[in-house]
Image (cartoon, rainbow, N blue to C red):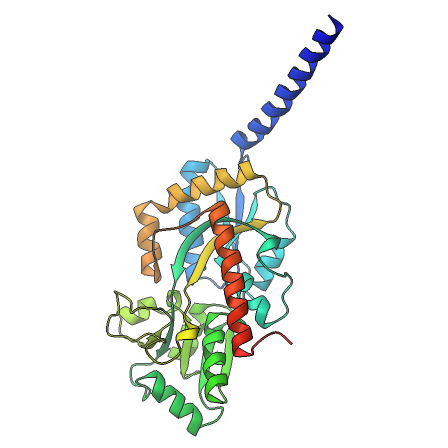
Length: 325
């Protein structure tokens, strides 16, 4: 009888513990969630974060508050996430570049993907080289020839040091032995503002900062950082066509959290965001800022993709001789 009593007690303890874990998962969230955005208002990360917050609220039953913390290629925002409590209430919406690319080019507060939890891919962004409509630069070749003839006079706005635009320009400069003035900004929108104001010659950044300007014909594309031409701009050549095929890469936008997040909470968030991103309002908002693609990955598949991107970027940076000193 004593053995049966002890067995029954053990079963109750196990069931009690299991019930507690299930309850914690089902009850999440019980308070508002914070999205930290590492870019200035108006850029792709900001727009998608606010729309994702809006379309997720009815599903989660809680507010998602968007807080902008621009600076140093997401370094400020992602540092806050890296050091946050892994309870699912503090997340970041942004790019994979600071995690999969930048650590190879400069010292960052994190080593790589293993220091974060990857929850959901929210979009795919293409980088482009953009000039004003009346610019004498008509092609990438024109840009290279201008930079060679005028050392240091080609000024290019990029989003942060160590980002995709920075990689493009540093890669071209190194290959062609050019002196280019690369100017980092805290977001794609400020890059576009600098171009319109005549403060820089060109912008190398994601479409989110200038897609509306392209539609209004206030800027012109020289090239896009893709394997193939974009359906929206079939007349614009790729960097690969321009002779820089090793500098081709899309930027993955995503929701991340601190490492060691509870898998149940991660799944709850991933399922919510997947449904929220199917909302036509979200699709339209993302398309309007130059995001594309709907074949998104989540949780473990996203983590695997980020680990692979980190390895590929590391090999590219080594090939270009652009490793962090």
